[in-house]
Amino acid sequence: MRAMLLNKIASMQDQPEPLQLAEIPRPEPAANEVLLRVNACGVCHTELDEIEGRTPPSFLPIVPGHEVVGRVAGLGADVTAHAVGDRVGVGWIARSSGGEHENIDAGFVATGRDVNGGYAEYMTVHEQFAYRVPEGLSDVEVAPLLCAGSVGYRALKLAGIGGHDVLGLTGFGASGHLVLQLASYLYPQSPVYVFARSPAEREFALDLGADWAGSTDDTPPQPPHAIIDTTPVWHPVLAALKCLRPGGILVINAIRKENSDRQEMATIDYTQHLWQEKRLQTVANITRHDISAFLEIANKAGIRPEIRLYRLEDANKALQALRRGQIRGANVLAIADQFG
Image (tube, rainbow, N blue to C red):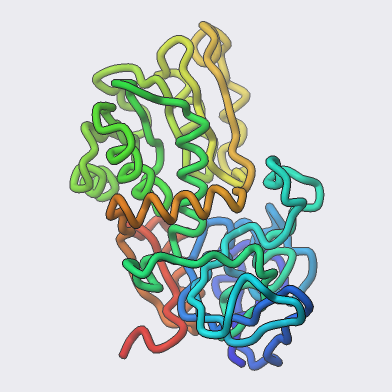
């Protein structure tokens, strides 16, 4: 089968094409696993963190990718949850304890980092971590919902807004544009303010219904009750803490932060950024419940990602566009017959 392989860890500035197209053996499902014929796989910023070593893979070479949609093509022994032909999705969580806090369990196993993922024509996954996907969504529409959308759903739960509370979003990529739609559906009386570095991102946010959009350091019409940060860098964290209202919460929705501007955190000022009972919360991975619940809500609410399609062999181009911030919504690899 065809797959895009990561063979070594390096900066994408030094290694502009980190993935290589290769022919590798099709995997065989073990007991309680299903074999998937992959139709689409979203391209997530966490792949950049893997490639550049901020959250390094458990082994090399490895097939990245954790926003996977496909059809069940084979069954391992004792599989009861799925049948051949079922359409399912796979997210960042490949395996864990199964408990309430499985997202932070020491045994958490990540798709595309600790086991081979979806930048390939086939992959295997434990039956309990493959989710039936709503028929109202296409394969390429489902893919970003499995991580960008689901982790955004978890971040919004942790933000704890309600009523007419003001929600801020800093950064407006794959996750941000889905959280905006989700918040507008769940909390229609809550204004949503978007902080984004580029005019194109701010225009996109307003097109999707944001009540206000400004640059990272702009002052919004009202201090937000909660801000969700989806950026890979540190400056927006300080900017968000500064404009939160007293008692507000900043939820950082990122697996890792880059080091390019880490020195800015040395300028943190207790009075400006932390005083008056401001809170800081991080999101660590997602649970099975997050994915299942968000898929149901997204289908009911008509939440749809804006996507740009790439072929499997063009995964490096999709990653570079993501790295440069040249996206509107989400990038998705169309692996099986999506281009006609």
